[in-house]
Image (cartoon, rainbow, N blue to C red):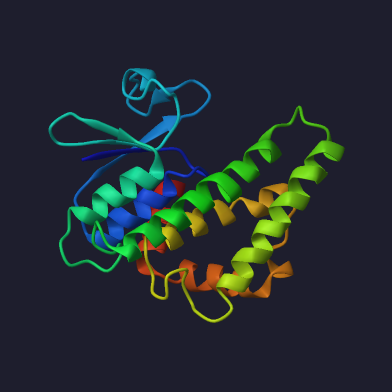
Length: 199
């Protein structure tokens, strides 16, 4: 398998999951501005959407969208604890968390990356994001991970929360989330993924 990634993007989530599961893969960097891969290929020919993550399977099929990729990966390794079995209520709960992170945190951060948006407008987006962070903090007050033990949703949440310093948002304003981030950062898979992407 090939995982196409760019630093400081949501592709970190499937990267962490690949390492957690011990699946073999090749990591290929994409320049988000030029849409070229590190070896000079046109990334748009791999993923016409133009953004990472993209996972190219051994049979040539391409899978995009982080929540879909991580569930596919977990289902490839029977008996792993990253995702409940398909068809169970717990799996639906996982999908609920993945959708919340995607629509409320990931998409909530997106406007903050845009240098053309006025700070006064960004303040409106931040206020909404802060309410979502409050909710996450409450959800993690009684347990270390979103579903009780480390899983797919935690890798995704960690990934998007790493962006907060870019927007001058202090994770320490939510001590529960700061503790979650420290727990996550200590995981060998997270350390290895972050080191590989920084190289």
